[in-house]
Each structure stands twice: as C-alpha cells, then as structure tokens.
Image 1 (cartoon, rainbow, N blue to C red):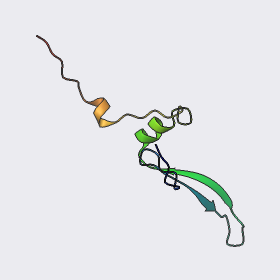
Image 2 (cartoon, rainbow, N blue to C red; image 1 turned 120 degrees about the horizontal axis):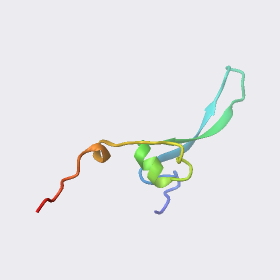
Image 3 (spheres, one colour; image 1 turned 60 degrees about the vertical axis):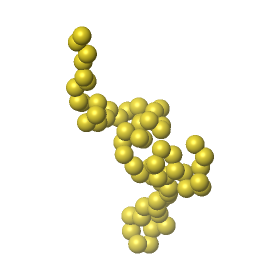
Image 4 (spheres, rainbow, N blue to C red; image 1 turned 30 degrees about the vertical axis):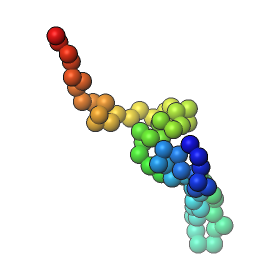
Length: 67
C-alpha cells in the first residue's frame, strides 16, 4: 500500500507519543499503533506473534454443506 506520510497501513494509525513522569521531565518518545487488534496482527504478524485474538467472525459456526 502507498503511504500518505502518516503511516496508515490497513487503517492503522502509526505515530509517536511523548510520555512524561513529571512536569519538568523532558519525556520519552515511544511509537504507538492505534487500531483494531485483528488488523494489527494482519499488518505486522511477526511483531504481534505474542498476541492471541479471536474475532466474533472466527467464533461463529461455519455453514456445513451436507448434501
């Protein structure tokens, strides 16, 4: 997929965030991925291999063709 400069992959928002422990702290910059867990796993399977995620679609019974 082509990037629009904001790091949008599979509808995920990828950006940086500064975390401060106190008001005078210069802070620590971390990377943040925001979006649904199933899309994160699809887009980055190696990075999210530690996660197990079940969607309602995967839990539904499949229609069986008994002809």
